[in-house]
Length: 159
Image (cartoon, rainbow, N blue to C red; front, side):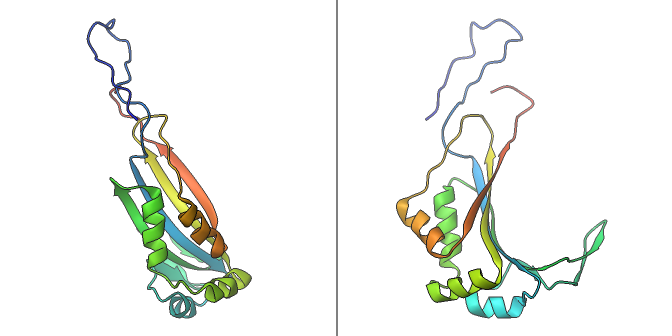
């Protein structure tokens, strides 16, 4: 929901919130697997999807400014920031890209740390979200821990 108030007739310098409440403004989701003996090619074959990024323990990762030796293997599949949709929909889109074979997920959960890491961006305070029972079931069946990283991107100008 949105709570709109007119800006007229307020003392000069007073901050007025024009939008409060409603859905999250944008979101992202990443399926993450970590492990010392993680072989990205084997995980790719098991999940049936090409990762956004992957490495083995000991690989060297070069970035613009830094270089580092990876402390553990990782396999990540991401859907970057989306606007105009729900986190529920983004999670389902991500899970639709990988195998639905729950036996594969049981095996992966035995061998690796796996989770679903989600970023939520709010342009105003008091935003919310919900998950359908079907989405919660899909996440739980795969043994995924669900992490939410929530950001409030305050504008310079009050809304």
